Length: 360
Image 1 (spheres, rainbow, N blue to C red):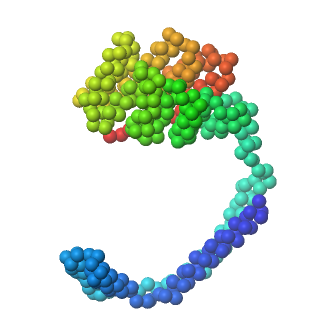
Image 2: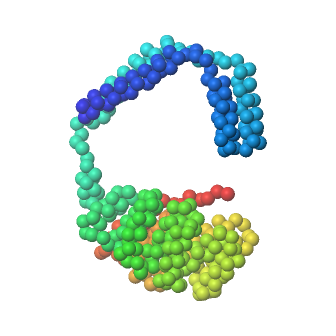
């Protein structure tokens, strides 16, 4: 470590020396003539040269020539103030540059830990794996999952959990990579395509981008009844200017949902908002909350759905519904207490940061 500080000090001194050398060279040129007039004279010659080679029309030549001549006259009339170097500042600057590395070294020896051994990343991952998953941060959980995938080989379920950890760590690009890898291994899984579309929207700040549309379209190929995909594809049509087409899709989606399904009320609210009520974002939020409530209702009726519980916990976390998140997490933990991989996924989902509210 001491050797590092010696090298750092030498490099700092060398950098300071180069800066001072260039400053001294500039100081020797202090008081030289203002180059502005020479620049405009050269510009006039270049304009004439371009016109002579037929590269610019005569009208363009006259216009450019007049502008350059005007600037030349203005520069000639201006009172030039030659730059002068203040040599009195050189010594303090040089002294500060030489003392800075030694001051930093002294501070490090006083408050740092020069005797602390290196902490390789592999060792830290091993330590994290020995901890309770609930104690890990989202980035730590993502690192652990990557290590497990490297050891045990590619697995669609593991990549799906990794995507959730990356989202919780506010790394949508990492989640997209994980979901694409999971889809390569299990291309028929609708939930993976839906998740990819949602993460692509997160990365785009909520916009239903063409890549997100393609992901939702792939989900629909495998499950034409996918409510999530149909809702967002219709929203994308409205955002692209096809308001009538998007509203028609939403109306068909709502008509196909049972009367008591909260998702139907949510879609109907979005339709009403898009037809001229207050800002669309309010309707979209209501629709999203309704879909989450619909998922919760479905899980109450058919609770044996670990992926559904993970999605519910993450949705509550994203919406900032902390009490609902904690209740769903406790219920799912009890149900899957003997399946640690699901408990890990639930813990990751619960740590997802709430989404930022858009301002208009």
